[in-house]
Amino acid sequence: MGTLREKFWELPLDDLSRPEWEALCDGCGRCCLHKLEDEDTGEIAETNVACKLLDTGTAQCRDYRHRKAFVPDCLRLTPKLVKQVPWLPASCAYRRRADGDPLPDWHYLLTGSRDAMVEAGACVAGRCVSETVAGPLEHHLVDWDDK
Image 1 (tube, rainbow, N blue to C red):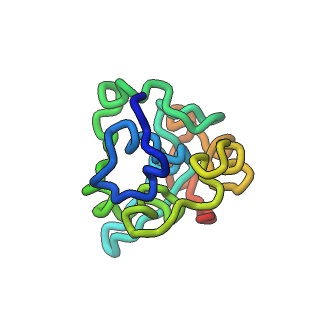
Image 2: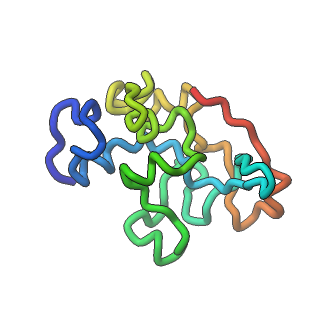
């Protein structure tokens, strides 16, 4: 994965190497869930419906490296894009760092374990359904608690 500098997550996002950028992701899976946008207000409604590539039990992409071949509209988040997309949760490590905030206490880079994220309720693992079986998105609206 490449060399990661000590406490790289405290650096400005534009200063991170590609491996550091990838390692910053907390792996919550929320960016891989479908959202609905109200055409009149622009308000974003979240669902618990996952992209077909997301493993709903682990919240990890089944083919991260080749995901755009299977899901062409999958976004590759960049420091610039993180500042532009309105639907990243307040708990997102990318969003928090872009806003100058520290990582959440449960982040694996601070705890050494992804279990803390699951225990804090910040991960969608086990709480989402694949788009391949979900049916209409309107039936799957959720209000995630941003931890």
